[in-house]
Structures are given as structure tokens and as C-alpha cells.
Length: 88
Image 1 (cartoon, rainbow, N blue to C red):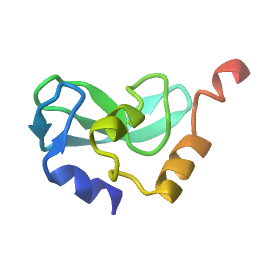
Image 2: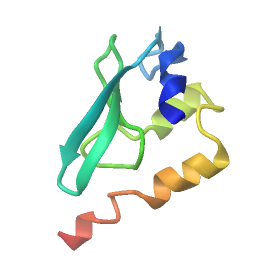
Image 3: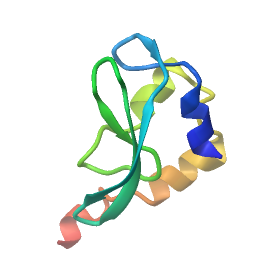
Image 4: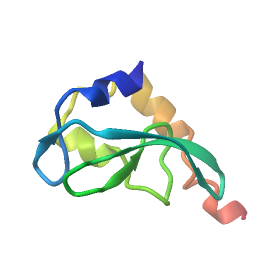
């Protein structure tokens, strides 16, 4: 399960290795998300789709290149809410 990997220390965008807090069912204008939050810098990342309400998880890929597989990245971006912005 994707969420299990956030229960191991991961290097955040704040350059600290942290175990992320998992927050279920945060709503945005287009649906709900499972979000992770860094306990150090408190940055929020959507784990299931790119959403303008939260930081893009691809920022974590720079520090953790194997965080998501190629297929998981494809699913993340294909579910993107940024495509919905023009369709309000």
C-alpha cells in the first residue's frame, strides 16, 4: 500500500528525514484526498492526485526518487485536479 511507505523516514522538502502524518479524507473543490503532512515543516501533500490545494508530491520525488513507481506516478498525474481548474 502506498501509505505504508510514509511510515518510514523520508526526506521532506525541508531536508529533514521524517515520518509523515497521514490525514484521511481532506476535501477540496473536486473531491477528497488522503494527505500526508510533514511534522517538521507542516507541508501538506496529496498522495492520490495532483491537487492545487496541496503541494505536489513530485517535490518529494527529488529527494526520494523511488518513492513511487513509474505506474504510480502515471496514476497520480492522470488523476490530477489541475485539469479540472478550467472546468469549474
